Amino acid sequence: MVRRSRLEIYFDVLEVIDKGTNKPTRIMYETNLSWTSLCSVFDTLINSDFIREEKRKNSKRYHITEKGRNALFYHVKFLEGFIQHK
Image 1 (spheres, rainbow, N blue to C red):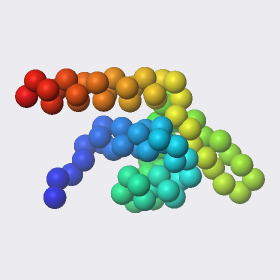
Image 2 (tube, rainbow, N blue to C red):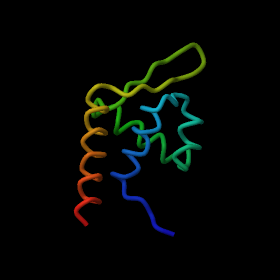
Image 3 (spheres, rainbow, N blue to C red):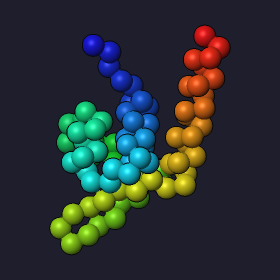
């Protein structure tokens, strides 16, 4: 089993949120992370302005910011170029 780097985990979370999943539990399942790990990732991404947290009455929702969308776009482009030239 290959472990993901911290950077890969950040981009996995950004990708899931960008595709429309915004509930924390769903993000946790789709990225295959523990709750503790996901909370740490959320903190980092929020503090870096890659995602924003929307607090509702009894729940939270997460949305990708323009900065996060740009980072994800360039990450995907880099991977496409890397794979083509390999």
